[in-house]
Length: 151
Image 1 (cartoon, rainbow, N blue to C red):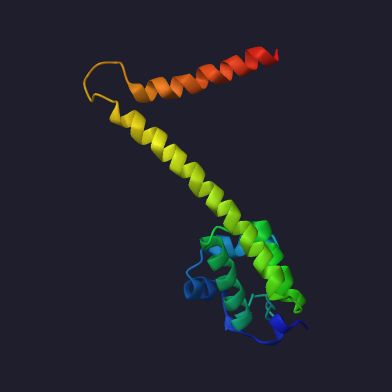
Image 2: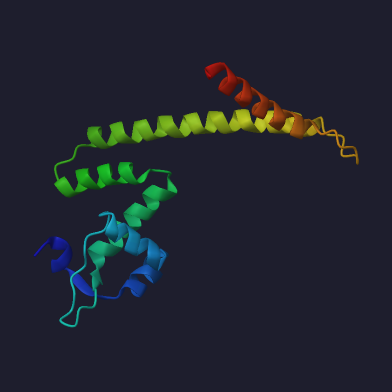
């Protein structure tokens, strides 16, 4: 019997959801994709969760809150489950994720600048001319040029 099963208590999935603030379907999903261990079952087949399940689900949810992908979380959990992880290994994964987050922030800042500048040019009048639609149509025209050029 694994450690997760050895310390299992009498929590039902609904109790686990309530304790962690996680949706029931999300818990089911995490079990199906292997992020959560299968809980032990009673003689009648009901799942029972324990402290280890609460801690693991909380870990997964916090990692998701910080923007880690499912694969990144799987990698972190693999290190933890292995039990011989080093801070250097975890740091490498964290630094990589931080680089991804910083790239997304730069991309969002560019999007913000384009949108703010374009919306500032809008007149707000009842005319059909709209700078925002013009910018969006430019993207469509650029896409069409790329398609024609590749044909």
